[in-house]
Length: 380
Image (cartoon, rainbow, N blue to C red):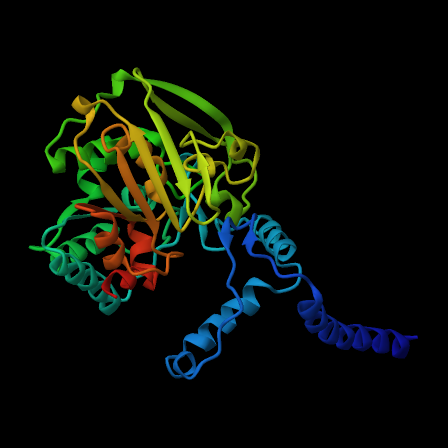
């Protein structure tokens, strides 16, 4: 009997080894993971240059990892096992104090941080007629490291911001998120379950940019603040899958005097008359309520009275932290161009010239800035 049991175990193991690769090749490829709230690695392009630079090998490894058969189910199983073991970390997400979830932030590559900062400097130096501002916002772990589990390691994000400030000094107006967020750290400036700042955190960023540019932001009390969702479980919850977490709420700030806007999404050749997508509130990624989510290129035009205009135009080069900030900027700037540098493959300098752009705002959270080579595209 034992011999047959052994044979079954061996046969099952061998069968699994053969079945998983076959499943990998025959299952349809997903472009986006709802569970992890991110785009998955595309099929890597083979070329001598990509092989020589090791880019092909890195992308191939990420492709296999991202499209491993039934990956979402394995992630959930792993999370359940980790919680049974009373672990306070899963898939790079910590379960912290006061209901906050945090993402690990390891020591960044100092050479890459310098490379990215200098790329921004060269971009600004090539366009001396353009006013270039870099806003670098810490994620929640930067302000709330004291809420991490005991002995959880984290590299200080303020040191990263200071390093970037040094590399762009003299060429770029630098807005350090620590400067305008820290005085409000006791207020709800970050979601507890997501990596973004709240609409209030975005308001503080808008106010800081306005003051940097020399114009007056609209006072907070002059907005109608409305809660549009109380069931938001964000990207940190999605990755960590911790149970018993209280959902976040999402708020929208509506000015007392409404402004008519149009949002053109170049990716899909669609035009919308609102900067908010109420359909997103019924999806997993409720943060895509702002601007309808991630797009490579957008253009937002506002019908403003002359007295309300503070800048004629603005190009925002960004990650998704900008999504909840841009509706505030649209109350003062009639022509806003929005490029997500991670997905846009055009030439930024050509875009500036073709559209007569006079002001550029690069807006990133610190983690995205130092962990994504896409920022080098500004140096093309």
